Image (cartoon, rainbow over all chains, first blue to last red; front, top):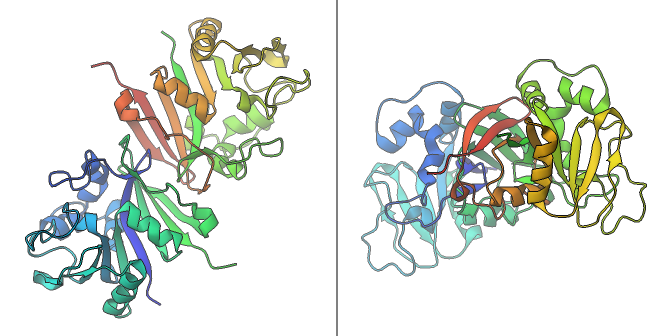
Length: 219
Length: 219
């Protein structure tokens, strides 16, 4: 079966997956951008996110950035990753952080409590707004992925919900050598060993430590 | 002035400095021993803790283990690092985890609420029991260190108390590629950037990521 994967999700040394006070000028919360130094250095991110040719083409950081886009047939995002708008949608104006041609290029399922019509963007991305919960989003994403894997983008709260249900197969987490001090902690309130997860890979570049956490077979 | 340093303090990927339920058979809490794989591999630990000749003599892990014992003139330990006995000392029987010739070989100041006479061990270690709080322990340790640095052994709670007072100069933290799930979290309830700390070094071996967190000059 296709996997549910978290990829390139970066936390600080003190465990935060985003800084505090997300808003339109701080999509990753205050200080959150400093987490992603390793990713910005890679050719994959330069090209996928900024449309630039550049960045490093080899090395560990590039390997991890690239693997995050391989064999992905759909994404799931929490609503706060889609944008800073909270509560009912006041209108249809907000169309994501990524311009008219977003990086995804596949169907993206956005978890929200507030219904909205699908948003067809350029380049193959369609945002579907799912109000029926995480299980429904996963079923729909799997169907849309047509045998490929589903990538769970975050944020912290959404990842935790899927972890508690043991629905995530594999997580690539990058630990950046920065301190954020406050924000949302990825490993707060989830006991990963008790849920059957273990660290199965560990390597580091000068800019980040990369680990893979995998769900272990039921015993 | 002599520094107050934390060295070779290891946390799990999910941020725990010790496992839950410390007792006589689990000095580091349940699962806590798995944190220290990197340290056990080093010549410094093999020799200092077990009295063995062996372990790796070069490499990053050995470098960090060795630096932790350089220029140290005294130690400070929380009482739970000294032993599993809680409350008033029932008798003088408990003499530490380390046998009659402990690894320290310098004066060690043990923070406790319960007075006890100093304990003179073989090899230069004397345990002094300090009931007057963390500031007094530091003054006494500095005096005993005669110009050398003071090493703060832990545990988590004691490190946090010294951090909140900005009394720690430098911390070498090792992040081990294991998940503990519960226990005491080193970075819980301390906002390091707000306290003026920053990550100043970051490198990794196959067994651990090593970071140095340093107090920045007052601005």
